[in-house]
Length: 200
View 1 (tube, helix red, strand yellow):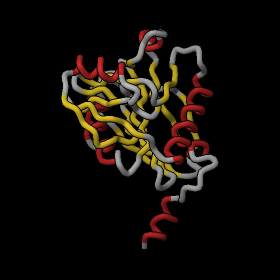
View 2 (cartoon, helix red, strand yellow; view 1 turned 90 degrees about the horizontal axis):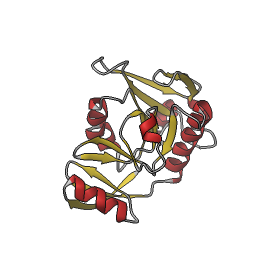
View 3 (cartoon, one colour; view 1 turned 30 degrees about the vertical axis):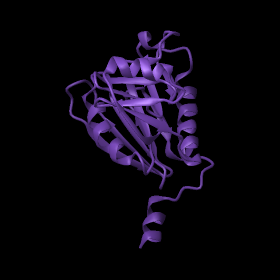
């Protein structure tokens, strides 16, 4: 989801009260409440495609449930975010009155020009420090490429893999496989090699 330049400084408690009362969603980034704005058509469709694929693979009865960007995720005391897609396998996160996920297993961000720096920077560090997150996926809107940061258990080293068109990849933390083409289905987004040729 794209960030809006409006920023407000407040405590975590003030942020939660403010965000819950606001018609606009705000992320809480190191003491700043940052308003979120809409993304592009490609951004929305990529997030929607992945949400559908994960819901289809995991079902809706649990234990692992897929959430879209409407649900807040607690990362740390000074960090609450709205990832594009989140999967939690913790029953406590699935209670109907919940508006915040505390134990995500998979977090996904669809990269847009306005958010790429933070998605690859601060958020990457925060997600890798979270005790329950085992995989972090980045979906590119400029070319057909999926990036996966993964680990087996807390304390294990993180690995990094990239996947492009026609490739199948595994989300080990959910024990499922996905095809890159299915994530980009219906979108006219170039292959990485085509984009490089165009830029040359």
